[in-house]
Amino acid sequence: MSTPARIEDLLRECAPPVLAALVRRYGQFDACEDALQEALLAAYRQWPDHGVPDHPRAWLRAVADRALVDAWRADSARRRREALVALDPTAQTQTGDDTLTLLFLCCHPALSPPSQLALTLRAVGGLTTAQIAAGFLVPEATIAKRISRAKERIRAAGARFEQPPQLDERLAVVRHVLYLMFNEGYSSSAGPTLQRVDLTNEAIRLARLLHRLLPGDTETAGLLALMLLTDARRAARTDTNGSIVPLAEQDRTRWDALRIAEGRALLTRTLGTGPVGQCQVQAAIAALHDEAPTAEQTDWPQILALYHVLTQVAPGPMVTLSRAVALAMVHGPAAGLAQIGTLEPADRAALGHRLDAVRAHLLEQAGDIDEARAAYLRAARSTASEPEQRYLGLKAARLAPAHE
Image (cartoon, rainbow, N blue to C red; front, side, top):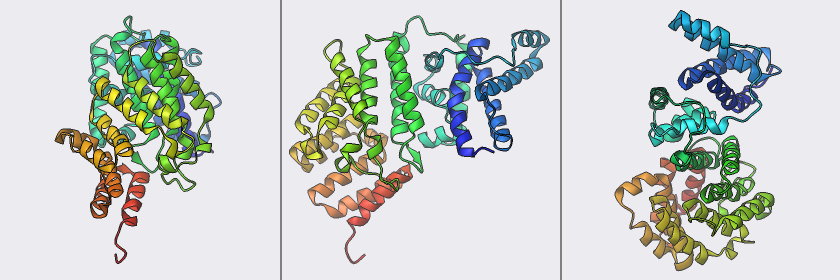
């Protein structure tokens, strides 16, 4: 017998290439995705008792093939004949990697950005509908409808399983979706663990493929560099109990020196060779953090200068919040709190618990202990991440008056 956790990890790994192979052969994304879900469900039911097959991808492919045939039989005799001719249950999946093509399909311009992300996390990231819903903090039924509508729109648009002739039309969206996938893996928005290594690794793998496809695109290179420089700190972000270790307190000897070197080299080759975009600037900020031997030696003035550039290139509430931290490190907590005060109400709402967490930190530095504690507690109540809840709750508890 195999453990459910091992089976779940294996199925998450197998699902994207199997779906890519199905769509490449049959060309109907919605029908293929439904068939894959039936195959995954069959695996969940059978593999724990009967064991994992020797060729799990081929097994899933054969079951999905049969599901497609059954669906097409119900449609018409013509489809039945075509499916039976096309079907080869013993066929192995293609040796080529079609996941990047699948990613471009999920980022079809007919879809809204939320639908593109949800569909990508389902089809490429291998997340269940429930996991995606938890990440978006919305009901599972909402995500299910979003994914269903996305598949219908792809079918209505007549999209084919091939790289679009004009990659630039979807490139920015593809990069954004990969960035969001990486972030969800690096700091999971919900659940018992801080990180989803499977998601960060898949995002990095896809970013490598995209960079290989478009080696001259400076923002794609910047995205890959940003992922590598950020993911290099992964091992030091939690202690042996899974509790969060903030950046300033991390054991930097546990950072991945090879990933840092690769990210820095990529950034060095990229900067100055094309238009400066947000990924390149963010990667440069990450590099400054990684290059500092200690937290005290971090070049905060240079980081602040880069955030000023970022506000020009890609302004947004998260950039403003991050710049507030840099301002506080250079000019004191009052300057950081003043920066936070410039946020509009809609931006404050979009930042969620992160706003209260940063504000609490700056208030604590400024000596306003009561307000800091209240902000830490609000932040803890607002996040669905259990490690963040524990971390923020502990920060609040340490600020409690002695008599409580």
